[in-house]
Amino acid sequence: MAHAQERRCDEQVCPQGRIAPHPSDPVPPCLAIQHEGGFRNNDWNNATHRNGRLRQHWSPRPPLTPRAVEQRKSLLSTAFEFRWSAVQLAAANVSTIAVAACLLVALFSGSPQCGMAATMGAFPTGFGAHQRLSHLRSAPMILAGFGMGVCGFLGAILSDSLLGSALVGGGIAAICGFATQYGQAPWWLTLQWSIAFLLAARGPPELPAALMRGSLVFAGAALQTLVIVVAWHWHPFGAASDVPRAEATPPSSRLGWLVQLFRRVISGQAGLRYAAIAGGTVSAAILIERHLGLGNGYWVPMTALIILQPKRRDTLVRTAQRIAGTFLGAISATLFAVIVRPDGIILVSCVIALAWATYAVQRVNYAAFSFAITSTVVFLIALTGLPEPDAARRRTIATAIGAALAVGCRYLAGPDSSIEPSQQK
Image (tube, rainbow, N blue to C red; front, side):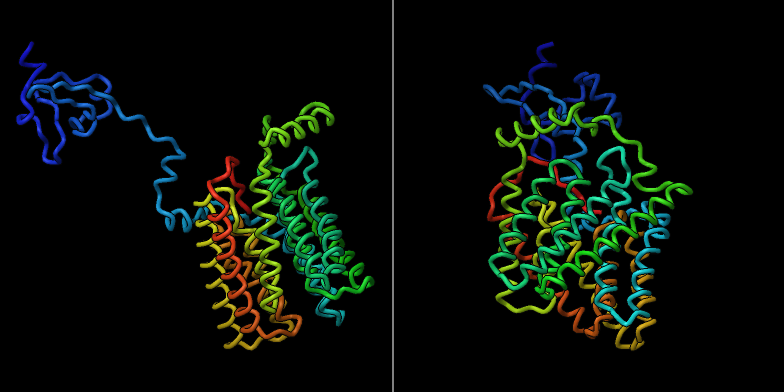
């Protein structure tokens, strides 16, 4: 018995320099179950040496949690992991109808600016078909359309005021950061409001033009909502096919829900720190792009807000996806424009086809989504008269600046926030 418990260390050293168990030792039951092929030397990790004798204490390794397994993946393998089984064909087929209608009206009415405004309302609203806020399935799209109309009006009114644009734009971005803790749907909803403001902030500041832009954005969103709701009666998809989760149900009374929200704010559990980071980043991005005088500079704050995540690693992953997708999308659109020299009809056809692809790959991978949406926007801007190579170059430069700003601000802000990040789809 003494010989089995105490042996000299020089008899039990494995090739890796660790102390290994003696072959005569009985195999611990759980080790025999998990490792039928033999012992793993580093499982005997608490061996101590006293007076030339060996004492062994076996302690099993705890199993890795799914979160730990995900963290062990390299950044690039996480960023470029494509889930092609998540292609949304039904959503693409339905959501493209309203976008195509707005583009055709813009093409044949002789007013491309009006058609662009309506398209910028219909296009993002289509992604709301996969969001759920309440038992009313169309609630995210309705609220998105109304909010985009109001924020588009505010952005146009404040387009001549640098300080006003920075403060209001940062405030809306802070609301978006605050909404992150409540799930993907609130984050997506407030993100559309912020994007609408940033787009309109580079438009004409006159009151009639601002009212017209806000009305057209709301009209495009309303058309998209109507088409999707009607299509849900024949073929449910997105939020119409999802079963609402029990934990997403709000408290029985609205007053109780407001009290709960107020308590979270007072106790510091509402993600106020991340909201401040998001608001400050977007305000800084607006000031920087105005100072640099970039064409289509609204992509700088938009990119910064979309890339920014509560976790540093998630911010880096989103940055890699965004830059790769934007760069490849801009190059592809530029090469196509140089080779084909498309006219108005071909441009509209390209936008419709690429919008369909954007809806289809929205849950496959964010890099694929960025590739499709970059190509879509390049051709969409080309409808207003800006050559495709110039639009692609401006988009790429603005994306690089916005990504660098988001990563820099996230690392300067300190440790990760405790809230879970929301993935934009």
